[in-house]
Image 1 (cartoon, rainbow, N blue to C red):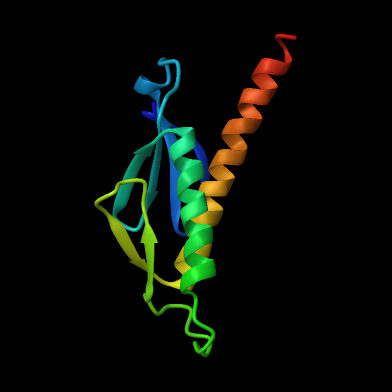
Image 2 (image 1 turned 90 degrees about the vertical axis):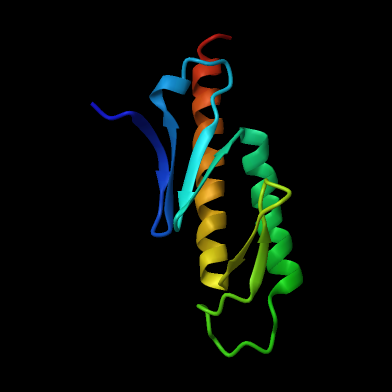
Length: 117
């Protein structure tokens, strides 16, 4: 039996709940990409998504000639002490992973709570 409940995945990573933690009132999401794992609340995931948007808007240079793998972007993380050097392609994939995770969590909350009204 698996120790996790998968929420979302793409080519860069995966998000899931640890089954042992799901019994709490607001379980944290494990978000893993590359060799890095973050244990985050829903609000921290939303903040991380916003950091991706800000990074793309403020740091993507127009001079790049299609080199999607250049790790020239510095992505702020939910931890004040950690930033990640990341490529534009990785940034897009991380943001998609985060947004897909947030969408699925909010959809599940909505479906669960819709039956209560």
